[in-house]
Amino acid sequence: MFMGILFAVLTGVSWIWIGVVISYAAKHRLNIPYLQLFQTLIGITVSISLLAGMWLLRKAPPDISAQTKWITAVSMFGNGFLNYFMFLAMGAAMKRGPNGIIWSIVQAGLIFPFLMGILVFHVSPSVTRITGILLIVASVLLFGLGKEKKTGTDESRMQQKKTWYLFALLAMVLCGINQCCGNLPSYLNSGEQIGSVYRAFFAQTGTLGGWLSGGLAAGTLLRPKFAAGEVRKLLLFALSLNAVGLTASYLLFYNALDFLAKANAGSLGYPLVVSSCIVGFFLYSALILRENTGILQKAGFVLGIAGIVIICL
Image (spheres, rainbow, N blue to C red):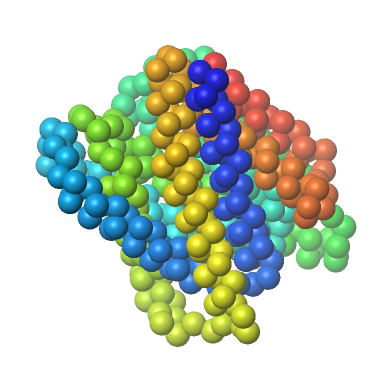
Protein backbone atom coordinates (compact mmCIF):
# COMPACT_ATOMS: atom_id res chain seq x y z
CA MET A 1 0.00 0.00 0.00
CA PHE A 2 2.76 2.44 1.00
CA MET A 3 4.73 1.74 -2.18
CA GLY A 4 1.59 2.25 -4.27
CA ILE A 5 0.88 5.64 -2.68
CA LEU A 6 4.55 6.66 -2.96
CA PHE A 7 4.78 5.70 -6.64
CA ALA A 8 1.47 7.45 -7.42
CA VAL A 9 2.61 10.68 -5.75
CA LEU A 10 5.99 10.52 -7.52
CA THR A 11 4.16 10.05 -10.82
CA GLY A 12 2.06 13.15 -10.13
CA VAL A 13 5.17 15.14 -9.23
CA SER A 14 6.83 14.05 -12.48
CA TRP A 15 3.78 15.22 -14.46
CA ILE A 16 4.36 18.74 -13.14
CA TRP A 17 7.18 19.01 -15.68
CA ILE A 18 4.58 18.93 -18.48
CA GLY A 19 2.90 22.00 -17.00
CA VAL A 20 6.25 23.74 -16.49
CA VAL A 21 7.27 23.14 -20.12
CA ILE A 22 3.94 24.28 -21.62
CA SER A 23 3.92 27.30 -19.30
CA TYR A 24 7.43 28.31 -20.40
CA ALA A 25 6.65 27.66 -24.07
CA ALA A 26 3.46 29.75 -23.90
CA LYS A 27 5.07 32.69 -22.08
CA HIS A 28 8.11 32.70 -24.41
CA ARG A 29 6.02 32.09 -27.54
CA LEU A 30 7.79 28.88 -28.52
CA ASN A 31 6.30 26.76 -31.30
CA ILE A 32 4.15 24.34 -29.28
CA PRO A 33 2.99 22.30 -32.32
CA TYR A 34 6.59 21.52 -33.23
CA LEU A 35 7.43 20.82 -29.60
CA GLN A 36 4.76 18.13 -29.71
CA LEU A 37 5.99 16.88 -33.09
CA PHE A 38 9.56 16.42 -31.81
CA GLN A 39 8.30 14.79 -28.61
CA THR A 40 6.06 12.43 -30.59
CA LEU A 41 8.73 11.39 -33.10
CA ILE A 42 11.13 10.59 -30.25
CA GLY A 43 8.39 8.65 -28.42
CA ILE A 44 7.43 6.68 -31.54
CA THR A 45 11.09 5.75 -32.08
CA VAL A 46 11.35 4.47 -28.50
CA SER A 47 8.07 2.54 -28.74
CA ILE A 48 8.98 0.89 -32.07
CA SER A 49 12.36 -0.12 -30.63
CA LEU A 50 10.69 -1.69 -27.59
CA LEU A 51 8.04 -3.44 -29.67
CA ALA A 52 10.73 -4.82 -31.97
CA GLY A 53 12.67 -6.07 -28.95
CA MET A 54 9.55 -7.74 -27.56
CA TRP A 55 8.90 -9.41 -30.93
CA LEU A 56 12.48 -10.71 -31.07
CA LEU A 57 12.09 -12.20 -27.60
CA ARG A 58 8.96 -13.93 -28.91
CA LYS A 59 7.13 -14.15 -25.62
CA ALA A 60 3.83 -16.03 -25.79
CA PRO A 61 1.17 -13.31 -26.29
CA PRO A 62 -1.87 -13.24 -24.02
CA ASP A 63 -5.15 -14.50 -25.44
CA ILE A 64 -6.76 -11.24 -26.55
CA SER A 65 -9.46 -10.97 -29.22
CA ALA A 66 -8.86 -9.00 -32.42
CA GLN A 67 -11.83 -6.78 -31.54
CA THR A 68 -10.25 -5.77 -28.22
CA LYS A 69 -6.96 -5.01 -29.95
CA TRP A 70 -8.61 -2.87 -32.63
CA ILE A 71 -10.79 -0.94 -30.17
CA THR A 72 -7.71 -0.32 -28.01
CA ALA A 73 -5.71 0.89 -31.03
CA VAL A 74 -8.49 3.29 -32.12
CA SER A 75 -9.19 4.61 -28.61
CA MET A 76 -5.48 5.20 -27.91
CA PHE A 77 -5.11 6.93 -31.29
CA GLY A 78 -8.00 9.19 -30.22
CA ASN A 79 -6.25 9.74 -26.89
CA GLY A 80 -3.13 11.06 -28.61
CA PHE A 81 -5.08 13.01 -31.24
CA LEU A 82 -7.10 14.90 -28.62
CA ASN A 83 -4.04 15.33 -26.43
CA TYR A 84 -2.37 17.33 -29.22
CA PHE A 85 -5.20 19.88 -29.33
CA MET A 86 -5.48 19.91 -25.53
CA PHE A 87 -1.85 21.09 -25.37
CA LEU A 88 -2.60 23.84 -27.89
CA ALA A 89 -5.64 25.05 -25.94
CA MET A 90 -3.74 24.90 -22.64
CA GLY A 91 -0.83 26.81 -24.15
CA ALA A 92 -3.19 29.49 -25.47
CA ALA A 93 -4.76 29.81 -22.00
CA MET A 94 -1.40 29.95 -20.19
CA LYS A 95 -0.21 32.67 -22.56
CA ARG A 96 -3.04 34.89 -21.30
CA GLY A 97 -3.90 33.88 -17.74
CA PRO A 98 -2.72 32.50 -14.37
CA ASN A 99 -0.92 29.24 -15.10
CA GLY A 100 -1.59 27.56 -11.74
CA ILE A 101 -5.34 28.07 -12.00
CA ILE A 102 -5.38 26.99 -15.65
CA TRP A 103 -3.48 23.79 -14.83
CA SER A 104 -6.01 22.99 -12.10
CA ILE A 105 -8.95 23.60 -14.45
CA VAL A 106 -7.46 21.36 -17.14
CA GLN A 107 -6.76 18.53 -14.68
CA ALA A 108 -10.39 18.72 -13.52
CA GLY A 109 -11.11 16.85 -16.75
CA LEU A 110 -10.77 13.69 -14.65
CA ILE A 111 -14.52 14.00 -13.97
CA PHE A 112 -15.18 12.79 -17.54
CA PRO A 113 -13.79 9.25 -17.14
CA PHE A 114 -15.63 9.00 -13.80
CA LEU A 115 -18.88 9.93 -15.53
CA MET A 116 -18.11 7.50 -18.36
CA GLY A 117 -17.69 4.70 -15.84
CA ILE A 118 -20.99 5.55 -14.13
CA LEU A 119 -23.13 6.31 -17.20
CA VAL A 120 -21.72 3.86 -19.76
CA PHE A 121 -20.15 1.00 -17.83
CA HIS A 122 -22.53 1.04 -14.84
CA VAL A 123 -19.95 1.71 -12.14
CA SER A 124 -21.79 2.26 -8.86
CA PRO A 125 -22.54 6.02 -8.39
CA SER A 126 -21.67 6.15 -4.70
CA VAL A 127 -22.30 9.23 -2.53
CA THR A 128 -18.58 9.96 -2.23
CA ARG A 129 -18.08 9.85 -6.02
CA ILE A 130 -21.01 12.17 -6.72
CA THR A 131 -19.91 14.56 -3.94
CA GLY A 132 -16.35 14.59 -5.24
CA ILE A 133 -17.46 15.35 -8.80
CA LEU A 134 -19.72 18.20 -7.61
CA LEU A 135 -16.85 19.73 -5.61
CA ILE A 136 -14.56 19.59 -8.63
CA VAL A 137 -17.21 21.28 -10.82
CA ALA A 138 -17.67 23.95 -8.12
CA SER A 139 -13.91 24.52 -8.04
CA VAL A 140 -13.83 25.19 -11.81
CA LEU A 141 -16.68 27.69 -11.44
CA LEU A 142 -14.87 29.48 -8.60
CA PHE A 143 -11.71 29.70 -10.69
CA GLY A 144 -13.72 31.60 -13.29
CA LEU A 145 -15.32 33.94 -10.74
CA GLY A 146 -12.05 34.94 -9.07
CA LYS A 147 -10.58 38.40 -9.64
CA GLU A 148 -7.48 39.05 -11.75
CA LYS A 149 -4.48 41.22 -11.02
CA LYS A 150 -5.15 44.88 -11.76
CA THR A 151 -3.40 45.44 -15.07
CA GLY A 152 -4.89 47.54 -17.86
CA THR A 153 -8.46 48.83 -18.02
CA ASP A 154 -11.41 46.98 -16.51
CA GLU A 155 -12.69 46.20 -20.00
CA SER A 156 -9.36 44.78 -21.21
CA ARG A 157 -9.01 42.67 -18.05
CA MET A 158 -12.48 41.24 -18.50
CA GLN A 159 -11.80 40.39 -22.15
CA GLN A 160 -8.44 38.79 -21.31
CA LYS A 161 -10.01 36.74 -18.54
CA LYS A 162 -12.88 35.62 -20.75
CA THR A 163 -10.36 34.47 -23.36
CA TRP A 164 -8.06 32.44 -21.08
CA TYR A 165 -10.99 30.92 -19.17
CA LEU A 166 -12.65 29.72 -22.38
CA PHE A 167 -9.37 28.23 -23.62
CA ALA A 168 -8.88 26.56 -20.22
CA LEU A 169 -12.41 25.09 -20.32
CA LEU A 170 -11.79 23.80 -23.85
CA ALA A 171 -8.54 22.19 -22.67
CA MET A 172 -10.42 20.63 -19.72
CA VAL A 173 -13.04 19.09 -22.03
CA LEU A 174 -10.34 17.78 -24.38
CA CYS A 175 -8.41 16.44 -21.38
CA GLY A 176 -11.54 14.65 -20.11
CA ILE A 177 -12.46 13.03 -23.43
CA ASN A 178 -8.79 12.20 -23.94
CA GLN A 179 -8.76 10.36 -20.57
CA CYS A 180 -11.95 8.52 -21.52
CA CYS A 181 -10.18 7.22 -24.63
CA GLY A 182 -7.17 6.23 -22.53
CA ASN A 183 -9.32 4.45 -19.92
CA LEU A 184 -11.61 2.65 -22.38
CA PRO A 185 -9.30 -0.38 -22.93
CA SER A 186 -9.46 -1.18 -19.20
CA TYR A 187 -13.21 -1.83 -19.56
CA LEU A 188 -12.79 -4.24 -22.49
CA ASN A 189 -12.66 -8.00 -22.24
CA SER A 190 -8.96 -8.81 -21.49
CA GLY A 191 -8.13 -5.18 -22.28
CA GLU A 192 -6.03 -4.82 -19.13
CA GLN A 193 -3.62 -7.41 -20.58
CA ILE A 194 -2.65 -5.16 -23.49
CA GLY A 195 0.81 -3.78 -22.79
CA SER A 196 1.64 -0.15 -22.08
CA VAL A 197 4.10 0.01 -25.00
CA TYR A 198 1.36 -1.00 -27.47
CA ARG A 199 -0.98 1.64 -26.01
CA ALA A 200 1.75 4.30 -25.98
CA PHE A 201 2.61 3.64 -29.63
CA PHE A 202 -0.95 4.25 -30.85
CA ALA A 203 -1.33 7.30 -28.60
CA GLN A 204 1.86 8.73 -30.12
CA THR A 205 0.65 8.06 -33.67
CA GLY A 206 -2.58 9.83 -32.69
CA THR A 207 -0.57 12.88 -31.62
CA LEU A 208 1.24 12.79 -34.96
CA GLY A 209 -2.16 12.63 -36.67
CA GLY A 210 -3.27 15.67 -34.68
CA TRP A 211 -0.17 17.58 -35.78
CA LEU A 212 -0.72 16.68 -39.43
CA SER A 213 -4.43 17.58 -39.42
CA GLY A 214 -3.82 20.80 -37.47
CA GLY A 215 -1.04 21.84 -39.82
CA LEU A 216 -3.13 21.08 -42.91
CA ALA A 217 -6.12 23.01 -41.53
CA ALA A 218 -3.96 26.03 -40.68
CA GLY A 219 -1.99 25.85 -43.93
CA THR A 220 1.29 25.92 -42.00
CA LEU A 221 2.42 22.33 -42.51
CA LEU A 222 6.21 22.08 -42.92
CA ARG A 223 6.55 25.88 -43.07
CA PRO A 224 7.53 26.75 -39.51
CA LYS A 225 9.06 30.02 -38.40
CA PHE A 226 11.62 29.62 -35.64
CA ALA A 227 13.46 32.26 -33.65
CA ALA A 228 17.22 31.98 -33.12
CA GLY A 229 17.99 29.01 -30.86
CA GLU A 230 14.33 27.94 -30.70
CA VAL A 231 14.80 24.55 -32.38
CA ARG A 232 17.49 23.62 -29.84
CA LYS A 233 15.15 24.53 -26.96
CA LEU A 234 12.29 22.55 -28.50
CA LEU A 235 14.46 19.46 -28.95
CA LEU A 236 15.77 19.67 -25.37
CA PHE A 237 12.23 20.07 -24.01
CA ALA A 238 10.99 17.19 -26.19
CA LEU A 239 13.77 14.93 -24.93
CA SER A 240 13.06 15.90 -21.31
CA LEU A 241 9.30 15.30 -21.70
CA ASN A 242 9.97 11.81 -23.05
CA ALA A 243 12.60 11.07 -20.41
CA VAL A 244 10.25 12.09 -17.60
CA GLY A 245 7.05 10.74 -19.16
CA LEU A 246 8.31 7.34 -20.28
CA THR A 247 10.25 6.79 -17.05
CA ALA A 248 7.15 7.61 -15.00
CA SER A 249 4.96 5.35 -17.14
CA TYR A 250 7.22 2.32 -17.18
CA LEU A 251 8.70 2.50 -13.65
CA LEU A 252 6.17 4.38 -11.50
CA PHE A 253 2.63 4.80 -12.82
CA TYR A 254 1.64 1.26 -13.79
CA ASN A 255 3.47 -0.19 -10.79
CA ALA A 256 1.55 2.23 -8.56
CA LEU A 257 -1.76 1.01 -10.03
CA ASP A 258 -0.70 -2.62 -9.52
CA PHE A 259 0.42 -2.07 -5.90
CA LEU A 260 -2.80 -0.23 -5.02
CA ALA A 261 -4.96 -2.85 -6.75
CA LYS A 262 -3.29 -5.62 -4.75
CA ALA A 263 -4.08 -3.64 -1.59
CA ASN A 264 -7.76 -3.39 -2.67
CA ALA A 265 -7.31 0.36 -3.17
CA GLY A 266 -7.15 0.57 -6.95
CA SER A 267 -9.50 3.57 -7.07
CA LEU A 268 -6.83 5.67 -5.35
CA GLY A 269 -4.53 5.57 -8.40
CA TYR A 270 -5.64 8.40 -10.69
CA PRO A 271 -6.90 10.72 -7.91
CA LEU A 272 -3.58 10.47 -6.05
CA VAL A 273 -1.60 11.18 -9.21
CA VAL A 274 -3.77 14.11 -10.30
CA SER A 275 -4.08 15.72 -6.85
CA SER A 276 -0.31 15.61 -6.21
CA CYS A 277 0.22 17.03 -9.71
CA ILE A 278 -2.23 19.91 -9.11
CA VAL A 279 -0.80 20.76 -5.68
CA GLY A 280 2.76 20.68 -7.00
CA PHE A 281 2.09 22.92 -9.99
CA PHE A 282 -0.02 25.31 -7.92
CA LEU A 283 2.95 25.75 -5.56
CA TYR A 284 5.27 26.21 -8.55
CA SER A 285 3.04 28.94 -9.97
CA ALA A 286 2.84 30.71 -6.61
CA LEU A 287 6.51 30.44 -5.58
CA ILE A 288 8.34 30.50 -8.93
CA LEU A 289 5.97 32.33 -11.30
CA ARG A 290 4.78 34.63 -8.47
CA GLU A 291 1.18 34.51 -9.64
CA ASN A 292 -1.38 36.29 -7.50
CA THR A 293 -4.75 34.64 -6.98
CA GLY A 294 -7.95 35.93 -5.40
CA ILE A 295 -9.79 34.41 -2.46
CA LEU A 296 -12.34 32.69 -4.72
CA GLN A 297 -9.58 31.07 -6.77
CA LYS A 298 -7.85 29.86 -3.61
CA ALA A 299 -11.19 28.46 -2.45
CA GLY A 300 -11.59 26.76 -5.83
CA PHE A 301 -8.18 25.14 -5.43
CA VAL A 302 -9.13 23.80 -1.98
CA LEU A 303 -12.50 22.51 -3.25
CA GLY A 304 -10.85 20.78 -6.21
CA ILE A 305 -8.35 18.95 -4.00
CA ALA A 306 -11.13 18.09 -1.53
CA GLY A 307 -13.21 16.66 -4.38
CA ILE A 308 -10.36 14.44 -5.54
CA VAL A 309 -9.69 13.24 -1.99
CA ILE A 310 -13.38 12.45 -1.41
CA ILE A 311 -13.47 10.46 -4.67
CA CYS A 312 -10.66 8.36 -3.19
CA LEU A 313 -12.98 7.36 -0.35
